Image 1 (tube, helix red, strand yellow):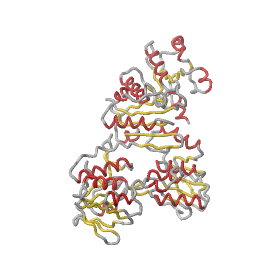
Image 2: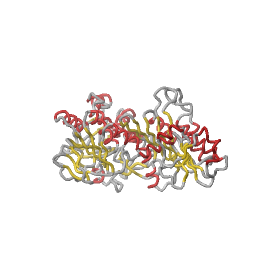
Image 3: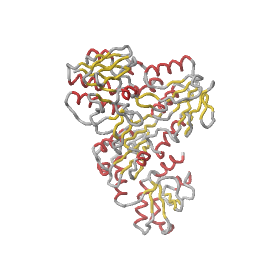
Image 4: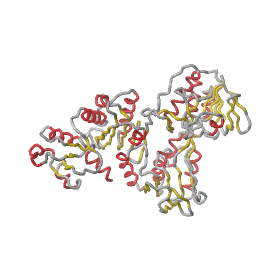
Length: 533
């Protein structure tokens, strides 16, 4: 059997090496238009910043291994110019023809470069290939670059901004949206943005790039930013020109449409990776998700299907994680904007808890948010903190994948020792909080506006005196039972504490003593401060 794979990235090579492990006689050809194969693209910002010091570490699988151990006919600098499905062959730029029994399209995605006035005025790059990173590193060194503008606040933009800071550059980060990192909701992204600012990154949110000039860039707002160099990390688009020309069906946005076995509408042609529209695990809608994990799984799945071991691809959750200086932000499933766009009803809960036991040294706070429906089905989760954000989201992502509910968060039996967690892990705590809500034991409150409410601050008096919500009444939790007569029963009382637990206890006291309009502020003072930062 002859299998031709176009693309030597995560999806294509995952397919190729799995095929070889399953069929030692198959004729496997990988055609890659650049001279780079099996490159750790996700590590490119860290290579620029010197965190990854050695260039050879950026190649996941050496080409010699691919050719000799896996016996793959690997062709680099080989651009495919046409796919001829009726003849079952592909044609390259040098007019070589490769006949196939099965064809796999793993062409990935290309960086978006919109029409910008004056692109020739300043040195600029996108960041997709190792060669791009090499050029950026060389420019910084050779020209003693002092200032950089990064356009785009997604993964690559944020990580590149951080790593340019590591090199000593003054960095400005420009993002058209009102926040960075779109997978995070507004109420979770504030600590991350503060972390960037705290390390010297200048944020320009809700503003876009208008033009380049001799000294830097001009924003839509008219602001001018000095820039020795510019990184465009605006986003990516599926690389599907070949597919469209061959009659392969795509979405309106250009992503290839496949079935559950990654087959296109043309017999014997598969597709995987960033060029494919995958089914969203929560909404069921088709969308492009540019993540290495799903691409690898799709490539492996295709190989199994080709050799007669079929199993379906069961949608993409969109799980991801990003390091931002001393913080980690992680997420899985849908956020609020996605759920609203898909018209899916949801509820939410936010807690602040320690990444490990509070009595063990250097415990740091973790913010955790879960979105769920009336039946307790988990629709999405986000975590931000200095430790443990990734592992909490990994646990929730696994429970989601197994169709678990918020009760499973409450009941999850997780590893505990003081350096690593608490007897009640943050996952257990948020599960308990959600189940208490679903059981009607209290009602929660979010946001920063409390019109017509009495704000009851149950923190210790010294905390209240240091800073508090305007108009808030302070009755420390330890005094609450003795001072219930000071509170009105005809007004909604919003209770808040430091992290959210004591306010729940206070709310239960009030609700069982004749107060029926009581709300507990989710996440406590720490969450309120995040929103006001």
